[in-house]
Image (cartoon, rainbow, N blue to C red):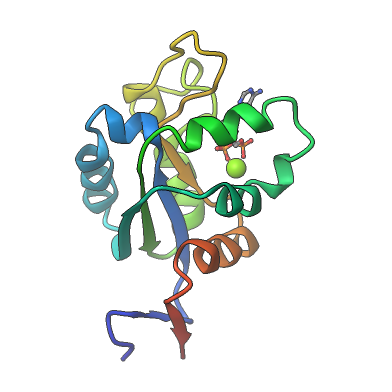
Length: 152
Ligand code: DAT
Ligand code: MG
């Protein structure tokens, strides 16, 4: 039985972030409430200011996109709450809880659909991040929680 600082390698995990817009608007508790109400378990939780270097790594797949620089600025505009969330099919389940990337299009009932909107800033401010695949989840958890170790 892994201790609380360890992740059970036989279970599925995802990295969830409450982004600066969600944090600033006081929605951290609401996001955590929805994750717990769904039945998923928190295995890591921290609050931090994300460095440029961390965000470059986190969003490396978007580095050629026109919005990359603005995305990194937005992600550094306030604190970020980072979580490791555990559960069967949690990666897919969290993507469903979050909703469409664009909060204007995200369905009501989802975090982005219920709580997000276009604020006319040019940035897609959508409150939460969730890993999109097992490979992304492993990579992102290692970036944001380097102190956590996987145990069989
Ligand atoms: P997701 O966060 O749903 O996984 P993504 O990985 O495609 O979406 O993009 C990462 C973030 O980049 C997204 O949450 C908000 C921002 N973003 C995506 N597409 C954008 C666009 N066309 N213009 C501005 N920002 C965008
Ligand atoms: Mg993504």
